[in-house]
Each structure stands twice: as C-alpha cells, then as structure tokens.
Image 1 (spheres, rainbow, N blue to C red):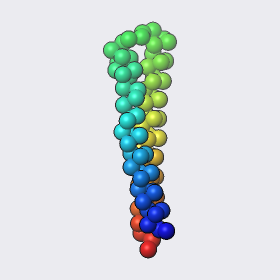
Image 2: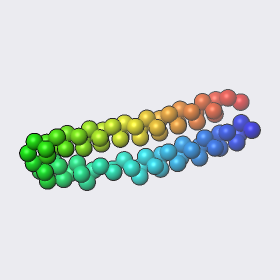
Image 3: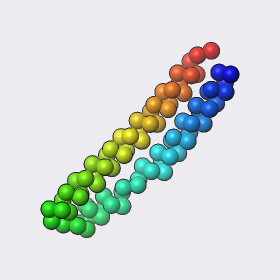
Length: 80
C-alpha cells in the first residue's frame, strides 16, 4: 500500500511540475508589453506595477506548490 501512495504522490508531483512549467510564463507577454510602455500614464503605471506583482505572486505560488509536492514525496520515500 505504501508503494501505491508513493506512486500516486510521484505522479501528483510530476503533474504539479508540468503545470508549473506550463504556467510559469503566463504573464510574461503582458509584462513585456508594459516594459515597452504599451500603456502609459498613471493608470498604465498602476497596471504595470500590478501585472509585475501578479507575476511574482504566481511564480511564488507555483514554486511553493512544486516544493511542497517534492517535500511530501521525499517524506513518503523515507518511510518503510
């Protein structure tokens, strides 16, 4: 039964990593446009700050999800 738990967790960790890889760059086009002054003025500056903050938050959450999954997988492998 423990082997099934490890296999399920390994599959989940791999899926989480794939999803992270797929979505890591999700806000890059918007960030790049803002860096090229696609939208200027006070509203543009607020949007620029927000989209970059959202990108950092998304990447932090994805990195944390991958880390947590790998940590859980490692803990399952330590038990006999």
